[in-house]
Image (tube, rainbow, N blue to C red):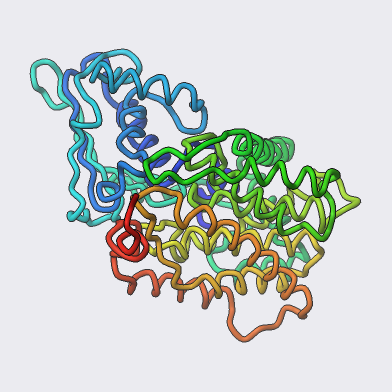
Length: 454
């Protein structure tokens, strides 16, 4: 396993609408102010580069950085706090650096460099702070590398130096070798690695908390009426879907309507994300609805007779093991490899999780992950208006169905297949490298420029 990457890195509680453009920048700014004397700060400058600058307004990046400078963290801040402080900053045109010292700064002061790509990643930001005597307190470049992960420039090597795990792997071949040698499932291998830093109860409790937040985001997403924010006037569909499903399937377990329920969960989560609500990054915000939707299918249709815990824990552990492979060998950043890195990775992870709880062998699980990604290769990231709405919300529902089908196809085989998951991951990485930057979260190509905004 890649050092330092586990289930609680790939799945984190955060706010919408984007893990790389909202969660990551907020974490970077919070980290920045934690290293300086916030009370001494008299002036702060924020520069955004590449994709962060190109789609930053639609993705909430500017707001996220300002809130991070106030010391707020995405895994604990509540949407009400975000709304309150965002309104206050806009009105007062001042930021409470570190939650204490007030500095003149608002969204209009953030400097955008959409055509400048920093060497470390297309999602780059530079933060500088000075005291009253104009002495520089700190000057730092951060990269938001997808899924809420951040790297401070110059500390990449330090970030990789973490505790070793009993079953390290960066490829599916290495993961399968551990499974064969130890006669363990992928979920069990991942759990053994997690035990290095947490107790068994902490692992189970943490995973179940993630599942609870996923469920809460469905409820919240289905309770909001009207249009999504941002100016595209996209109507929220989750409330109407919920009402119709309650009429057509009062018990919620009619097998004829499984896909409608899966679609509903994906729509609800992603509408909540698009509204800046509280969701689980899984492994990104733009793809946050896929794993909850497939997990809903697993708990309500595929694994009846088992407790929720018996399904949720191995599902998310297996999904995390597959996520490790994408993070280690390719990318989960839409700005780096297109939407194949976000929706494709999530679909692959979900397919593996479902195959695991349905009793698949490690090779069938690997096959399920491979099928799901193979049929998401080349997927572009071209959000209209730079908003995580069109085509992102529907794309999650479609990818969830792909994941379920991939798991079913793999389970009807014996695990042998011509193209390995490792080969597909490398192909995804190379496809992303060759993909025009117009189609990598810049709002410069694809649907983002082909559709006239209303």
